[in-house]
Amino acid sequence: MAAPDELFCWEGAWGLPSVSSDCLTVLAYAQFAGAPLKLRKISNPWRSPSGSLPALRTNQNETLSRPSDIIIHLRKQKFNADFDLSAKEGADSLAFISLLEERLRPALIYNSWVDSKNYVEVTRRWYAEHLPFPLNFLLPGRMQRQQLETLRLLRGDPHLEGGEELEKELYREAAECMDLLSQRLGAHKFFFGDSPSSLDAYVFAYLAPVLKAKLPNGKLQQHLKSLDNLSSFCSNILLLYFPQDTRESGGQKSSSPPQPEGGDFDHVPNKRRKQLMSALVALGAMLSYALLTGILSIQQLQQEALEAPPDLQTLGSRDEDEEGDG
Amino acid sequence: MSLAAEAFVSQMAAAEPWPESATLYQPLKEDQILLSDCASSLAVQAYLRMCGLPVQVVCKSNAEYMSPSGKIPFIHVGNQVVSELGPIVQFTKAKGNSLSDGLDDVQRAEMKAYMELVNNMLLTAELYIQWCDDATAAEISRPRYSSPYSWPLSNILAYQKQWEVRRKMNAIGWGGKTLEQVYEDVTQCCQALSQRLGTQPFFFNKQPTELDALVFGHLFTILTTRLTSTELAERIKSYSNLLSFCRRIEQTYFEDKSS
Image 1 (cartoon, rainbow over the protein chains, first blue to last red):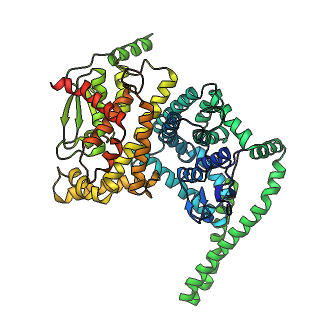
Image 2: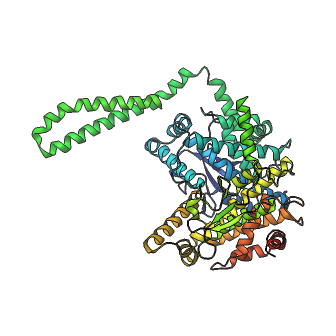
C-alpha cells in the first residue's frame, strides 16, 4: 500500500484524545479497527483540507469530512470493526446510532455552546486559547452561531433561544437516551460481544466529553455518572485504546494543584504578546485617525494629537479587561 | 395533603376516558398533503387504531399553522391539543392506553432506537426527495404545498419552506448528498428494519407497538404515493417481509373498519 491516509482532528483536552465528538468517533473507530492513519492533531480548522474537522485525506487525494463517510471509507480499506456482527446486530447498531443523533446530539450542542455559563467559562475559553492569533477572536463566536443555528434547524423552531424550558426538555431527552443505552449495555463490556464495533465508537464519542469536560453546569455529567456501566464503559475505552492521552491528563492533574505560579509563568509570553499586540493596535488606530484627519487639514493635526491620549487609555484598559477574562 | 389531592385530581383528569369527539387534523388529502406529512399522519392514525381509540380525520388547508408545534399531524382530544407521534404516545399512555407495556427494558430501548432510525433516515430521505430533488420540488412539492393560496403568497410560502428544509439538510450534513446516496440510505434503513422484523408478525413478538405504527405509516405511504420517479418505492419492494408486514397491518386495522 502507498502512504497511509492522513486524518486531521481537533486537539485533545481533559484527558480526551480530541475535544470534538465527530473527531472522537473517527479516532475511536480507527483504533478499534486498527487502521494505520497518519494523525494530525491541529487547532486550526483552516489548515484542514476541507476547512472543517475532522477530515481524512486519502492517498488518492480525496477529502472526506463526515464521520460516517470516513468510516465507510475505512471499511472499504478492509479496516472493519463490525466484521463479527450478525445482520441483526448491524441493524441494531444503525438504530442506536440514529437514537444518539436524534436525542443526544441536540443536548450536547446545548451543553457546550448554548448554555451561557458553560460556553463562556469553558468552550469559548478553550477555543480562544488553542486557536492561532487572529482566528481566536473570530472563530469561537462564529462556531457558536453555527451551532445555535444547527440546534434551531434540528428542533424545527427558528426562534429558539437558550432558556430553562428548552434546557429541561433537551436534558430530559438526553437523560432518557442515556438510560436506554445503559439498559442496552447491561453488564457487558461492549455493546456487541467482546470487541468494540462502530456503535461503541459513536457512544464513546458522544458520552466521553460529557464525562470528562469540567463544565460549570454539569447536569448531564451528573446523570451520566449515576449510570455506572456507561461511565465505566467510557473510561475503559479511554484506558484501553487511548492510554497516552489518559496518562497525559493524569500527569497534568497531579501537577496542576501546586501549579498556579508555574501556570502564570507559562502564560507570561502569551501575555506579553497580547500586551504588545494591543499596544500596537491602539497605536495603529491612533495614527490612522490622526493621519486621516491630518491629510484633510494639517492645521487640525495638533488638536487631534491633544485629543488622542484619552482614546489610548480607554483602548488600553479595555484590552486589559479581556486579558483578565482569558 | 392538599398538594397530594391536587396531584390525584390531575391524574384523574389525565385518566378521563377517550372522548368520541377526538379529531386528527391534517392538510387536504387530495391536493395539498406531501409525502412526509402523509406518512406521519398515517403513523398516528395506525397507532390510535392499534390502541382502539376512535378518531375522526379532518382535513384543513391551514393544518400546519393550527398545530402547536408547527408539525403535522395533531390531535384534538377533549380540551387538549397534542402534535406528533412521540407526544401523542405519551398522552395516550397518561390516559391508560399503552402498546409497549409488555416489553422489557432492553426491548423498550431497542424500540425507541428503531423509531429514531425511521425518523433519522426515512423521514429525512422523504424530506430530501421532496424539497432537494429539483424535479420533485418543481413538479410536485411546491405546487401541492401552495395549492390553497393565491399567486404571490403561494410562491413565497413554497420557496420559504424549501429554503428551510434545505438549510436543515445542510445542518445535518445531508446537503452534499446526491439523490443516489439518499436512495442508498433508504435501502440501508429498510435492510435494518427487514432484518429486525425477520419472520415475526410484528417487530416485538405478536403485539403491535408504536414502532409498528411508525414503520407502517412511512412504508405504506411511500408505496402508495406517486412521485416523479418510482425509485423510492422500488427500493422498499425488494424486501418481501416488509411488504407483507404493511399488507397485514392494513388488513387488520384499516380494512375491517370500512367494510
